[in-house]
Image 1 (cartoon, rainbow, N blue to C red):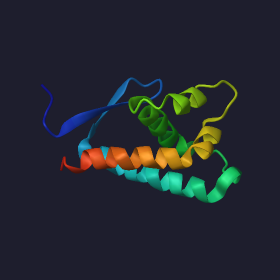
Image 2 (cartoon, rainbow, N blue to C red):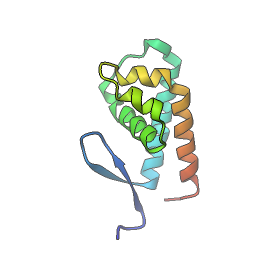
Image 3 (cartoon, helix red, strand yellow):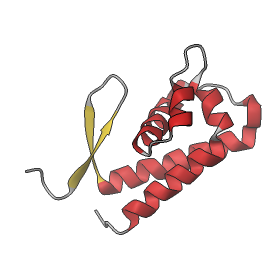
Image 4 (cartoon, helix red, strand yellow):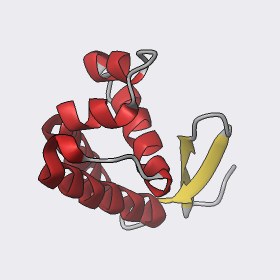
Length: 109
């Protein structure tokens, strides 16, 4: 059995599983929400920055875990960059992150 303070297993694309404490996961979610705020301010002029890839992966995984089929389908479209999907669904993705944070709120980990 794993220690109580290590609970989250977040799949990262092509990397298997990385374990996060609940507090680290919440911190990542907050960072991802701030990323979405930045994207929503740029509208269609957002450019891809490789430093944003962890946010892109987290959003893709969150959409999958929350069963958001339309968003997941767009993330999986060949020749469509994930930033286009994020721009098109930024408000929905912010709501997913908000809901995930609320789900974690009761857990002080």
